[in-house]
Image 1: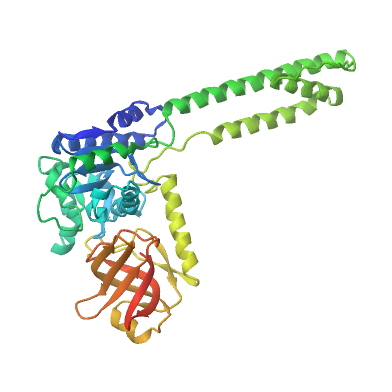
Image 2 (image 1 turned 90 degrees about the horizontal axis):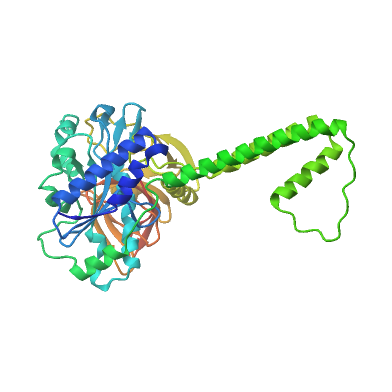
Length: 459
């Protein structure tokens, strides 16, 4: 039985569900169920960590195994009846909202951040950590056979690739360790020990559990609400007191306030009272109503600024794929691409039918560069000029990562024509899988007499 870290936090958040929506509760129940099954069926030397804090995002689970390294997991508690289409790149169309969601892309976003996190630990015995990181989506809401009916017309290659990184409720059994081991783009030829006990322990001890399973603790939210109610009640009492004072003001003349030489520093309540008294000397009863209403409105607005927005991505498909932080990351990525692509015009990407073998993007709207777009290497090398900013939709034939420089080297093309692609360190791109087709944008250039594409954007 594996060691399950972070279970108490999940259970505590679930049981304190007074501020959680129904969909949030369903998602937490799904995560808790998956975590218990992972702990039950994975070996004793394996760690299951819920919501590890590894950067801007936290995945639902991190698996650490001494035999195959690390696996990042995204849990979805969706109903099969609410999935109308399935695409070979992992995207699924949600019937209730007529929108496409891609949990596979969601979990891939964690890979580069986690790799950076591992490097920050500066563990010399870790080696090439990039090749030790795999990923998978676990659908706890239905079985593998349910999804097979929706992809029955796919070719064998697309089906195999899909099931490599998608696991289902009926697969969370004694075969789970083997399935997670295979959930990587790097082939593992043996079951040798990749992480020594000392290295594994050092990594486990460095990982902390995220405190943002929801964006705020339910107990803290309750306390803020109670404080807000108390402040609102105090405002009402003050308003009632002012009305009463104004009635007396009509009957009695106002005498000037005496001047004192040794005046103590007034408290906040005394200051408020003195301001009210000065107001009574100058204004009639009606003038106090707008002022108090304004104070009440400002108080309500300030209180609500501190109320949390609950993270809901892990629970409900018709909500955004990411939390507020994740949504910001997507926005930042798009801003980066806009800065690199100086001229764009709108372009709509149509979704493929359910049994399509063609990769489908999550977004329904993309932007196309005004420069030439190519669908094969031959057209690009024949028509483009060196220095042109181009767009090339092509398959990744080979992918290598240089750990020393942080540069990614690709061979793009088909069996007939190929060219090199280079992604320098610091370029923000999604996780790239060998054999998959992507839309690359960048500068067509030449290095040592050989043509290449310097890539700065990948879709």
